[in-house]
Amino acid sequence: MEAASHRLGHRPKRPSACTTSASPEPSLRRRWPAHRGQQPTEGVGQSPGIERLRQPPSEPVALVVGQHPPRGVAAGRHTDRLGVDVEQVPHGLLSTHSPRDGQVEEMRVLLVARRSAREQRSQTLNQLRHLVFCAPEPIRVRFKDRPKKSLVTEASSMRPRPGGDTIVYRTSLVIRSLARRIQSLDTEKKTIDQTLQSLINQTAPSLLEMHGVGIDTAASLLVAAGDNPDRLRNERSWAHLCGTTPIPASSGKVTRHRLNRGGNRQANAALHCIVVTRMSSHEETRRYVTRRRAEGLSNPEIMRCLKRYVARQTFKHIT
Image (cartoon, rainbow, N blue to C red; front, side, top):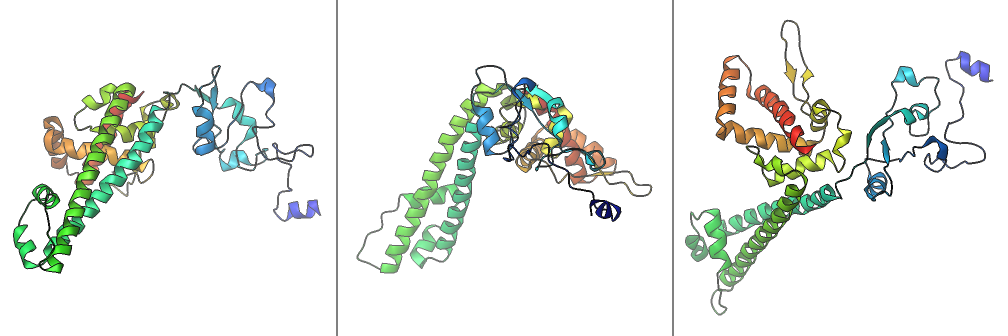
């Protein structure tokens, strides 16, 4: 039967290198021999592996990253249930784990709260403006053509009194509530920014000195690099992680590259914000944009080149 299935193109099933009859558990970590000197951890990019590597080690811990082998190379080799070439894992030593005491992880959770506050503020402000547009005549005349900041300030100081028109009274109460919610979100966002700035100054203080780099963009880049930036071997790997590496898209006599849709999209968005700021306020960048436009490049192609350049610059500050 085995020979017949092999002739029909089916490879005979081989025992996994990580599973034996005496130890049927599939975990690679539990059966790793102690004399090999390195202990693999599954899910380094997810919560179990991150939590294990976040613990302060009593002795230097080697970070081993096992890559999935190519299809041609993987044929005929023993692989575990995750497809990792177990024979090559001990030889995949890339760097030594040197954590930043969890400062980047603090930035990550703070960014979650900051983005949530920013989205809620935008949503609440839209609700406030639309409610004013549809309010009764006295309220609509009072807040007509008011800028956003002035609208929030005056609406939060309203003192509606009962006894008159109930619709005007209830609408005024809701408008005041929405305005005060916006002010509360602004205070929360300012507090988060102060904490983020303190963490950035401890981790990569020179990053904020770059033109166009703010607290939000700097924290996003540091979170993308992680608590162990030594795993980034060079600036090309950092650019690939941020999704700024050029992708060939040539056709016929036209030689061009397109945008990279992969990589960490939060880091890519941070680089995009930096490039947009430089294109409007950085003289050297504006001269570069003018020159490249004269060469026939479109705005997306120019921004792709600028994001690759900014990624090269930021790599020197985060490592």
